[in-house]
Image (cartoon, rainbow over all chains, first blue to last red; front, side, top):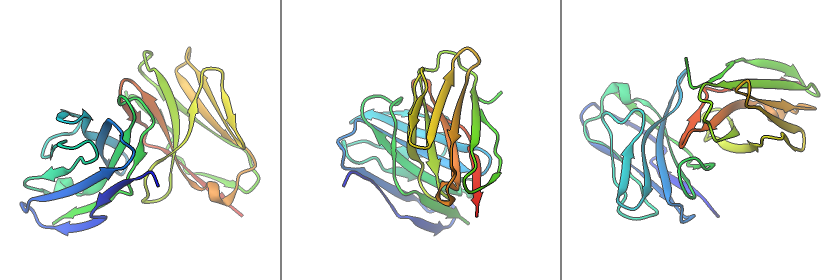
Length: 113
Length: 107
C-alpha cells in the first residue's frame, strides 16, 4: 500500500529536549516536505527536499532541521524545542517537483511544555 | 493580502443540499489548482484537481476562473460523510494551502 509514515503520532515533551520526527514514504517520490498546521493559519511549509541531499527552507524554517540521506526518509529535527513549536505536523511526498499533488502522512501532534 | 483566501465557514447544510465554496488567489502566475479534503485532526487528502475547462467527479464539480483569480467547488446532494474542511490549494512552483472552509452536513 502506498503510504507516508510518520512517527511518533503524538509526543509531549519539555522545552530544550532534542527530538526527531521520522517520515518515510514507499512510493519512490523525489519530493518530500514538512508542514505545520496551526488554527487559523493553515498549512505552512517548514522545509522541503527535491531529492537526496537536496533540501531547502520553506516559509517557517526557524528552529527546525532536516536531512535527506536516502530517498525514502526525511526526518524533522527540533534541536531545542520551544512551546511555540507546539503544533500538528505533516510530512508529505510527491513525484517530480513541489507543484504536484502531495500524499500526506497521518500527522504528528507535538506538545512542548 | 493572503496568497490563497477562503471563507472559513462553517457552512451548515441539510442532507441533499447543494453547497458551493469559493477561493481566491493573488498570484496570477499560479500554474495549477487543487481541492483537498481534511477530516478533523487527520491528514489532508486530494479531492480533485481543477482544470481550466472545469471538471466533475460524481457529485463534485470544480471550476477555475483565471481572469478573476478564483476557483470554486460545488457539492450536489450533500451527504453526512461530506462533513469536513475543504482546502483550496494553488501551485506556484510549490503548493500554497488556504486555511480551509468547514462544511457540516446535518440530517
